[in-house]
Length: 153
View 1 (cartoon, one colour):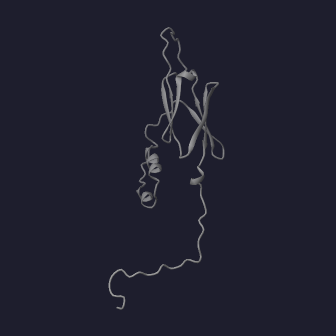
View 2 (cartoon, helix red, strand yellow; view 1 turned 60 degrees about the vertical axis):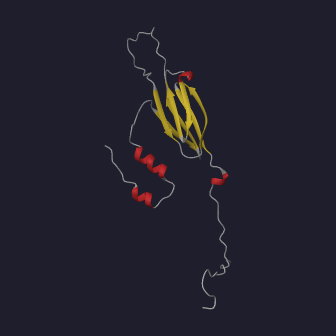
View 3 (cartoon, one colour; view 1 turned 90 degrees about the vertical axis):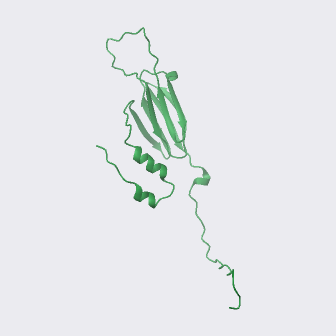
């Protein structure tokens, strides 16, 4: 069951959240469940994605980090000499996309025991971190200026 939500009331009172509303509206489209994966929060700003890629070698997997999107591709080359009596391990090609927040960087990836492990870290630049703005208490009122007309009116 898919519910359609109208985000227009939120868009009237928010600025700069267009991308978030687009992600929410498109979240239920093209839901693919292959290959299975886990997302783990390791600590403050540290994350790990673990994707099941049993049967794939390192040279059959590609990981690319595009604008706020992590794309994992897997393509197995077919071996014509093998005749399967039963094929239970799915080795079909896949593309898995993950939407990343701003300032999330890919720290590294490794393939171990049939799992592709990708480590991510959120690093907010110093100029983007919250800062306190001092409030001046002794503000001088600007002198009023007359633009047109007589001063002696």
